[in-house]
Amino acid sequence: MLLDFLVQLFSRHSGNSREQAKQRLKLILAHDRANLSPAALESMRLEILGVVSRYVELDSEGMQFHLATEGGATALIANLPIRRVKPLETGLSHSEDEKA
Amino acid sequence: MSRVIVMTSGKGGVGKTTVTANLGTALARLGRSVVVVDADFGLRNLDLLLGLENRVVYTALEVIAGECRLEQALVKDKRTPNLSLLPAAQTRNKTAVHPDQMRQLIEKLASSHDYVLIDCPAGIEQGFRNAIAGANEAIIITTPEVAAVRDADRVVGLLEAAQISSTQLIVNRLRPDMVAAGQMMSVEDVVEVLAIPLVGIIPEDREVIVSTNKGEPIVLSANPTLAAQAIQRIARRLEGEVVEFPKLASLGESFWERAKRFLNQKVL
Ligand SMILES: Nc1ncnc2c1ncn2[C@@H]1O[C@H](COP(=O)(O)OP(=O)(O)O)[C@@H](O)[C@H]1O
Ligand SMILES: [Mg+2]
Image 1: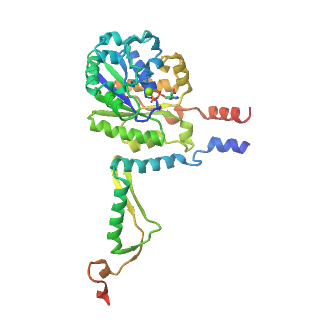
Image 2: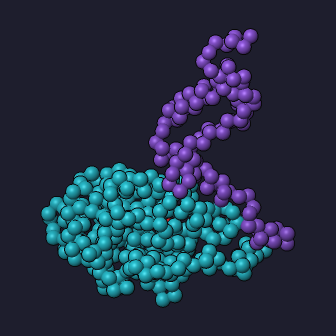
Image 3: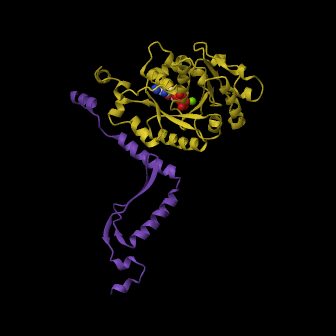
């Protein structure tokens, strides 16, 4: 009972839904402001992945791809963890068996 | 030069009408001539918050239709000599009015008042376009909630497109105890995401509801509450005075008030 009391009085950072609200809001606003349809964003994502994958092998687990907003400006944030850099030749549009 | 300010939010129920009634009253008490315009056609309630509902004879709609003169429709507030109200029609036909007609009406009001405050309806449709038609400034009202701030951001964009020259922000219904507990976004959080200048912070206040019951703006109280004081400060800021924003803690209940409330709720 007393502990409850103290926890409630001093709990300045309990279950920080404040931070959650702010982060969600930033994400929502970035998308609202860009006025980019989810379908367009998805096709952009696939194209970018296509290009990047020619050079490096990506780790699909930790991949992030979204719009973000900071003080009125909107940015595309892509976080594409690299598992392995592909041998240089295969990254270029030359034939695959050049190395052999 | 008179100032025509539209009070808008996107989302409904965030306090547009409450703030319009109280800010209008506060500005009039500073000696300015003020007219508050109810642009929420079909859902009028600015008259109720000012306690003027029994004195409404004509509305903006009759003025626009040429059925009465503008002066006949204006309701003077006897408690606040410099304040009058232009009521909205309680009709459902919101689309009966066009932005051009509103602009003309507001121009006339501006020629005879220092401030024209326009209480905007919720939404971003025709009613919104009518309400912003004659305005040259906007005050966006939001609460520190995700949905309200999202809608506010939408409105900021529309106001920019409509070439409203200045847009300022009021954060209403702030609960400092919840901010401190990490359960509500702070004013800084909201200002950071919306990126428009802040003109006021109004705390959550039970007196607001009591005052609407009575039809008496909170700023008229002999012992103004924290929310009433906050609105009086907004009026002074609009007048060009530099008024500091109080510390978060002094906007809410103190440690001991919190302790007392907790004990009341858990023990008694
Ligand atoms: N600072 C406040 N503290 C407590 N209640 C408030 C506050 N501001 C507004 N309210 C309440 O919120 C509700 C909606 O307010 P209102 O002014 O009608 O919003 P809107 O015009 O944006 O729809 C009303 O019941 C009002 O009493
Ligand atoms: Mg309203």
